[in-house]
Image (cartoon, rainbow, N blue to C red; front, side):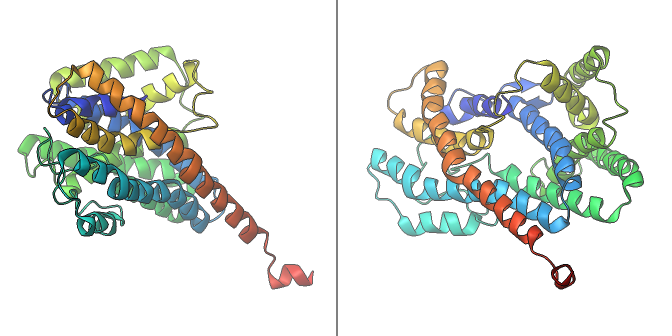
Length: 336
């Protein structure tokens, strides 16, 4: 649902219908990204604590995001972008397409465009503006992997709370004094880490935090107040995390995505598909609902293909690799 919200939010600027819808001081997509990181903080903390070693954890996490990330770069460079060039009649620059893959494969997007493409669309020059969060996601994995490895478990919750408060203080300072632009790498990282730490805190204290409708309503009220007061980045960490955890348990949606998780594919393929559709509709504008429907008709199969052909096989291979490695006896065990 959050991945779909991001696609909906991006439809306004990419399709030429105006700016993303705003909810207080954040647009709709930013709310969804905050939700991603809060959920991720909860689940990735569980993954690290359930992993025998930090190496096992790192392998599992890298195989969850990197293969799909590399695949969408390749698909964009060898399929989506060339099709857009054919639509406009401009010869495709394969060298620039190759550079798009090579320069971005390290998870940080340093070449957002491919020469000669996306020149006349409403949002020119960017083939996948959603991928900027992946580097921060990997950074969060690194941080929680290190913290769980070096901080005794009885101090982990308090450590996460302190780090979350420090992140909130840094965010507050930025908001109040406008010390850096919103696009600053460090500021973005601190903001997203704050939501990630909120989810991680709830995981650490999951047995002590009650699942209560009253708390969910309080969290919703806090978010509504932050929306109207323009202080979402300062106060929304724990409320977002708690409300999403509550809804995840209470809503009758547990089976959705339990076996086939297309959320990552929706998120990473939505933006390039939207740019492709925008290219196709330059000469024939359509209403926003029609544009969005066309985008989803193309994106959903791409997400399924990403899951079935890339993400799931990579995760299965990783589990097999870790299983074989963990079953390999040491010399002492073999002697015994």
